[in-house]
Image 1 (cartoon, rainbow, N blue to C red):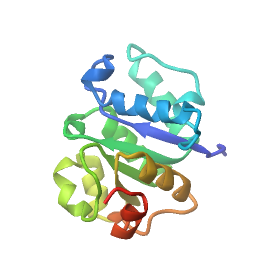
Image 2: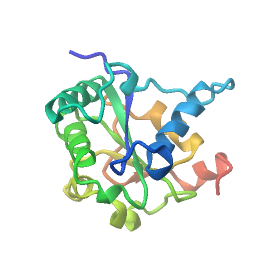
Image 3: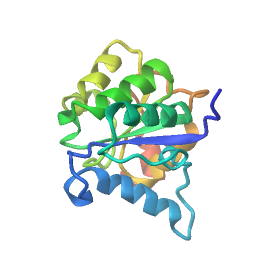
Image 4: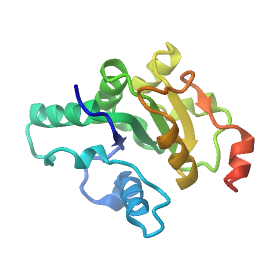
Length: 182
């Protein structure tokens, strides 16, 4: 059995290696928050726990590496932007495997929102793999804005042993006020 202490981060790469042209910029921001001197954002990055693979690797090699990373993860941050739904390759695979096989919670982090109080209103942004699992209530998802304090709380709070109560879980208005967001 894998030691599940990592946080897996999924994002739409938009078939480019240019960070500014894809959601990779948000993944890089997470990594920058992590290495800051203040240490106010901490997570074990599942992508750093296994050998790296290149986008030019064979699909089965990439798939094996991603599965290993997900199996070693306690949760998954899914970065959701306006283009995430367009990914019909790796995002659906990662969502399916994370929920169906690894049974880990999804931390849906929306890039263009200050707070999330009605996650169902954001359903137009959901990739089909996530939408179907939310609709049939097989996913355990906390919906938050892509902001440091909610991400810190969600990564600490939710894991494979402590799942969100349902597929449309969100933090209260009071929590956003506590964080100074709303």
